[in-house]
Image 1 (cartoon, rainbow, N blue to C red):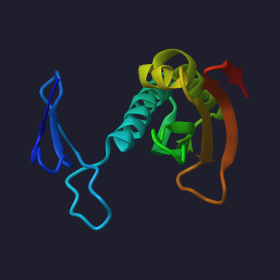
Image 2: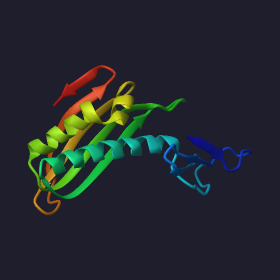
Image 3: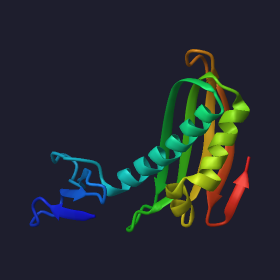
Image 4: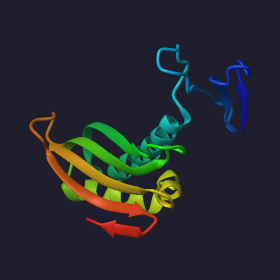
Length: 160
């Protein structure tokens, strides 16, 4: 991987090229400045979302669940002082479709505890709550069925 500052004097914007040849632009510009991309910590949360969502979608497909819509929401609490590390993270898988709640629960559990390397790396230093919200049918009506699946972190794994 290579990274290059666009303006080394300012030190704000950085373009990186991954090992597989894809480009990512990072920015930590002050509020009000034009931004070219997300901050590195935003990308860490996006990587967690992408990693676990790909796992869950794949598992649901293998279980022949008919997913109409799938979104993932990731939020984090950060320390007030530098370094402003993540103190806790919440990952919510939001699924709409003809899908069994147990299939979603198991898919989220497998991703959180076995398959997603980004989750495993972050769990070494921060607590992550993994949950789902399911709307059976064709659309999001009401609050859906929600459940916490697992909490991972430095203390290990707690299910439920």
